[in-house]
Image (cartoon, rainbow, N blue to C red; front, side, top):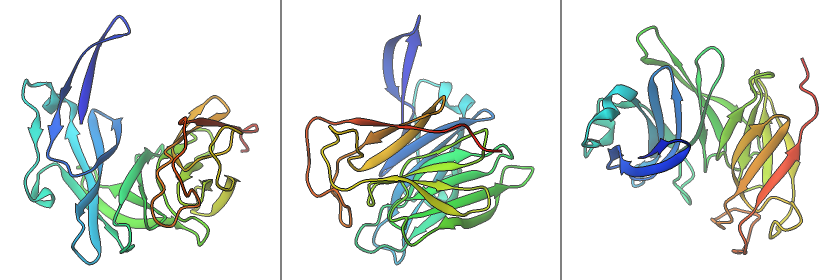
Amino acid sequence: VLRITMKNAKPTGIKPIITRFHVANAVIIRDGYLYVSETQIDIEAKPATSGVFRCALSELEGDDPIELAEDETKDPHFLATINVFDEELPLGADGLCFDKKGNLYIGNFADGTVHRFQFDEKGKVVVNEIFARAPFMKSSDGLVMDPKTGVIYVADSRANAIQMVYPDGAVKTLAKNGDTDGLDGGMDQPCETVLRGRELIVSNMDWPVPGTINQQYNTPATLSIIHLGKPQN
C-alpha cells in the first residue's frame, strides 16, 4: 500500500506504508483505520484463502512501512478470512464498502459473492457471512454503496455488468452488455465503480480472465458512465 503526499492539491512524494501483501486490492478509511483487502493469501489451500487487514492511521506515520508477517493470518492487523471456492481463478477478497451501521462489505471476486463483516464494540469481527449471491452475478470486483439508498453497486467483471445489491441482500442487474472495446460507452470488463451525484462512473479493466464475456485486450482503456434516476425511498 502506497501513500501519495499532497501539498496545495499537488503530489509531493510517494512511499510504501504497508508491505508484504500478495495482491493488495481495495482500500477504504473509516473511523481512523485503513482497511485493505488481500485477494490472495494461500492459493494452494482447498478452498483458497484471502482476507481483510486493518491498520490504525496513527501506525502509518513512521518513516518505515509496516511489514506484514510471513503468515499473514498470524499478523495482528489481520481481521478475517474470505474463502475462495473457484479453483480455476483463486482471486478472493476485493471491493470494500461500509454501511451506515459500520458493517463492512467485501466482494469475493471469483465466487461472485458479497460478504459482510459485523463487529463488536472492540472492533473484533463477530459475524463473517455471505450477504448476497445470485446465479447471474458471476464475479464481485469493486463495490460502492449509495448512502441515500443503501444499495451496493457491484462491478461484475466476468459478466460485463453492474449488479445492485439491496439492503435485504437481493440482487438485480442494473446494466449489462456483450463484448465491446468500450468506445460505444459499453463496459469492457468493469472493475470499479464510484458515485458522482447520480452518475455511476465505471472503470473498465479489460483483463480477459477465465469465465469472462470479454475475450480480448483492447485499446484504449475506457471509463463508462451510467446515469441513475432519483433515489427511491
